[in-house]
Length: 162
Image 1 (cartoon, rainbow, N blue to C red):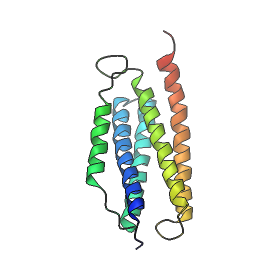
Image 2: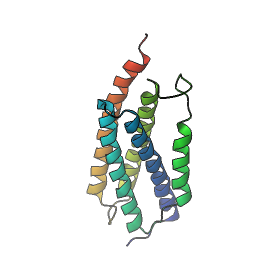
Image 3: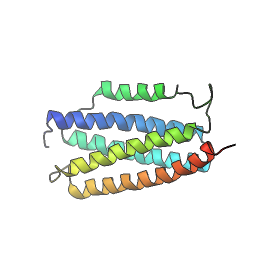
Image 4: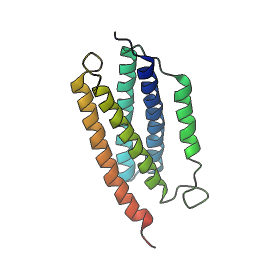
């Protein structure tokens, strides 16, 4: 087992917190859109985010990095606080809600992509294997492209003059 520096440990825990919040957001957005094509997309995306989060936790464990429970809990709290943002109506889910959710998910995926690429810069020994990190980065790029396509579809519906 390789030992992580305190900076790498902090960095990985920050990304674990982001992944935790992103997963909660994706699951909630999928639930809000259940039974629709967007809901199916978000459910599949949530499964991928969950798998990526598990991979990150595996990497952390292999490096001897413990998850910071305070950061993970804070991510869950911040995701719940984000639900309070009114999206042009005081209560309930509005047509603007999925647009904002997809934008936040897109930002998170770009952060994840940046992490996989940054880890690629120090790769070479297990668990930081260059090929694995390149595959994870490619998956994040694909996720970002898919979310962007959905975001633009939702934007047309949500922002079109009525």
